[in-house]
Amino acid sequence: MQIFVGADHRGYGLKEDVLKYLRSAGYQAEDIGDKEFDPEDDFPVFAAAAARKVLTSEDKDARAVLICGSGQGMLMAANRIKGIRAGLGWNIDAAKGIRNDEDSNVLALPADLFNESHQKAFVVIEAWLNTPFAGAARYIRRKQELDDLIQ
Image (cartoon, rainbow, N blue to C red):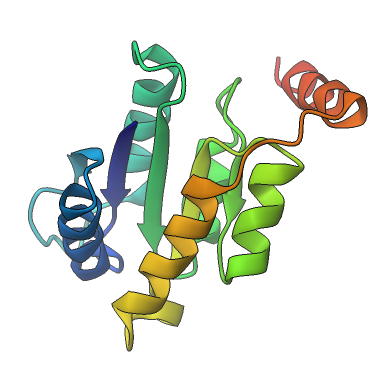
């Protein structure tokens, strides 16, 4: 599975560890940036780059992990792109829910929540990566309704 990982300055440290973790677990993880710590960078740049990579990847199950201070900025930016279903992963249940119900292809992480323990973020990421989409008719219908909202 191809996973694109991006972060702004507030998520930079966690991003570096997430990349190491994903690669050590055998995932094909690509750093979308920021490539160096820059306190003036802007999260929409990285959210858009990662989201576009997900949509254009030859891997039909490509995903992205986006990290900023609250996770909310990355979430909002990614969800402006048609075909992206980003969800906030603040705990295991949230991560499983956004995969099972919404078929999330982007996970937004709040670095401020995980800065004391990056290991907790890894557990959330694994829950998200390993939860399949339930594929119920109502969930499929809702995915289409989400895409129809974007003009």
